[in-house]
Image (cartoon, rainbow, N blue to C red):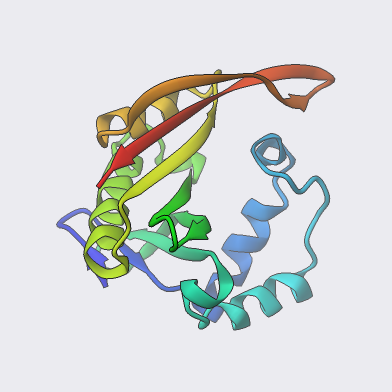
Length: 171
């Protein structure tokens, strides 16, 4: 497992079904996703079953973020749009609202940076963050991401166009 004294990044397990079902169907999170409709338990179960494929096969990789000795799951961190030819990937993170503001996101981002450099041979990671998502922007910046390129009117939610900030980190 990938971790430090506070958190662990671990593989997705069948026991994660309820947690993933809850977060993937949280309509408040849909503004950050291309998908705007609910997932069935069946679809989440099939997704979990497919998680044993390599990132090189699927083009994406999800880790569950866990804390404490019993492994309480508090979130996910994902690599997607994985582009090995150019040695880069997009990264996205979700921390359950009960655990936000404690530095877990920054720690998880730091761990995924070390993992992707050491084990996947990537040169850089990037993230597209909603300009009004200050906690996420702060977490990525604390983890060494920079750039701050603004993509104007990049996403629409609540009938209003919003800017996205492109952040990147050379590993």
